[in-house]
Amino acid sequence: MDVHTFRLLLDIVHVPLGIALFTLGTAITMRPKTVLSGHPRLGTVYLGLLTVVLTTGMVTGATHPGVSPFEIATPPTLASGWLGWWAARRGGRRVFGRSWRDWHVRGMAGSFIGVVTATLFQTVGRVVPQTAMVVVALFTLPTIVGSVIIARLDRQRRQRRATAAVIGRGVALSQQRGTVQAVKT
Image (cartoon, rainbow, N blue to C red; front, top):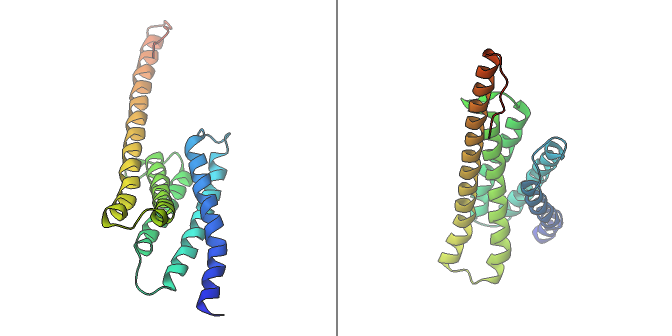
């Protein structure tokens, strides 16, 4: 089998699964994050697609001379996805001093930022002329936007946790005094 046929076969797998990966990742980010919503099952499917798509992308890249930015970005993207999945499987435990959820969100979001970057580069990058400014924007914009979203989610979760601790303390104090009071949130 010659190299062109091999690349074509890889693309027949890589492109549709890449579209499915982007679509599933987008859907997961918009759905509730509960067991009942199927989040763990969808996350496992996402990780499977991520592994196949990034592996086929790396093999395709290996058939071209030189090293592309995608070949550099693929290992950290895949590692982020596996980190997020692994953290969720540990559930309820602290990992390296942080909540498992912190690692899960950062890992899965980091992998999805890589998927969005690749999707933008492969779609917009083929329509818009390839200037240095466009290439830099396509590679940095998803990371900047994704990092801001992750920081915002992290801040919201810390605020909820602090509010829950205050409410919990208020209920505990009222129970010690023998009265039950409604606590405003």
